[in-house]
Image 1: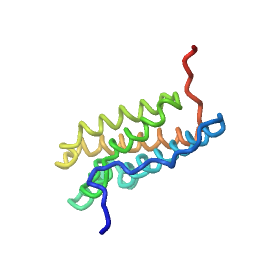
Image 2: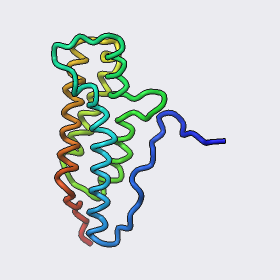
Image 3: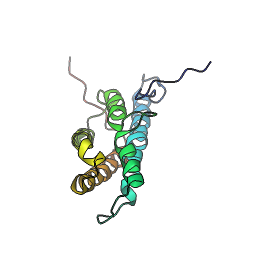
Image 4: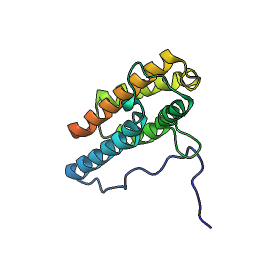
Length: 153
């Protein structure tokens, strides 16, 4: 009998690397930022990337957009996945883009009911937010790590 993860569970992040050296830590940060760009940025913007501002969404397209932005019964919500990966990154990386993406995801979450209802203004705003989130996370992954400052003893 196979064991399935419960709906909205967070899949494990990148495998734990030994972080004994600065190079190990940098590799781990690169892996986490790449995973964040992929798991959250790429998928949250998947449908949004293909919509123009004047696109009228039918029920099927709205359902696709909603799944990308908010997840479904089979997968975790992008905001939940972001929170899990960001929690691992924060002790290792100081970058304003991480906070900006978190704020944009929170704004996206606040618009969920209106987006799922197909309200044109909410859909347009959510689409723009998704593209901004993707852009921030891709830029974060491309920039490479800047290690977090450690507290002086």
